[in-house]
Image (spheres, rainbow, N blue to C red):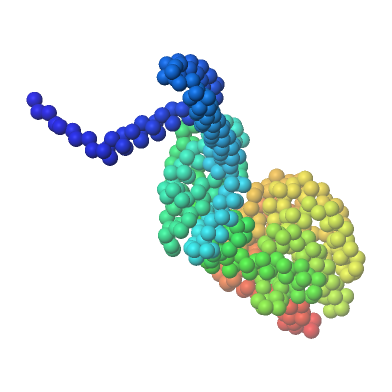
Length: 538
């Protein structure tokens, strides 16, 4: 058997002794205050007993040294007491700091997922931006929202919803691979990730893709497999914003854009769509000014009876003469008016202007034209709709039967009861009502039997391919047959070729509208157009 000789140097002995001393201190600090006090009392009694015993033997023949020995003993006792008090105070302080740290950590955490909460994340974001400013670094803020989370709560209950949130938090934490990245739950189903010094320019996108893949994996909840997804908006510091709240705001805008793209996707705030968004904001701000400062105007597209090639009416179409962007069509600003709550004053202006112009044709030029105005579904929820229509007719002097309101199928479905009641009252006033874009929206067949519309307008999406598509031809023929059975007229819109006109004529559709006959034109051009069609009346 071979033995290995171990040599202990003075340094190793000193290190060993130091280690034992540290272990002893740690052992003493680990004792409870009661245990320390008990040890001190017991040790003090033993110490006094042994000290007096030793002093009696050592100083038996020298009584003059007893006072000095007693003083030394008292000093030693004071030192021991001070050491014990120090250890107890340090222990109490460490416990207090540990408790305070736990409380502070709990206050910064979300109770359900264990992630940082919104307040803590806001603090981290502000501190990170200040640090990045000094170091001239960049940050990436990812704002996440679970898609269709409300449906999970409604169908499977809140326990399933909570389990989904917990699993989402776990997966997000795994996606934040770097220790300096922060993940937080900032709302009910909203999360945020802060990437410090991401690899630019691809880093944030790589993390976003990693998150999409992780969240899209099925989740097993209560024995059932559940699939979900997440939408992500990404904002960068300092290119998109240089303040915490502003950075959150632009990240939220990017999140909304991601949802509009079809969910389960991510979108950067920067890019072409940001310019489009800023342009939309400018349009929203300028639209109210346009209504009140005469920047809007109407053009009119004739509707013809092709059997006699006579104009039976016109459709009023609004345009905006923007001071900087030029002439804008309705598709550029009518949806914005809907979102900004300006569709009602816009509709009111169009009604008044259309009725005024139709009255001028009727009284001034002896043109018996019916003018049609498009009505947004939301205006049927407005209490003043009938009053505004009556006021427009009264102020212009236009007979009620010369005004037509074009409504969509959506109006009948969303505001079904309100719409039918309003339509009944308008019908009693003598106003005509037509269904625009028939066949493209929600089914309104049940409404057709409750209200007699003056006409159904065959949408141009069916008209454009009636010559080449048997399906579109069948749909157009069916709508035409339906209108006849219900004693309603049918108007084909979007006619752009002679072949389309000939097919529509073959199914006995006489009323048409489209570029083949005339484009939208100003009021004076309408008068000239009609005079050219009927030269005998010139």
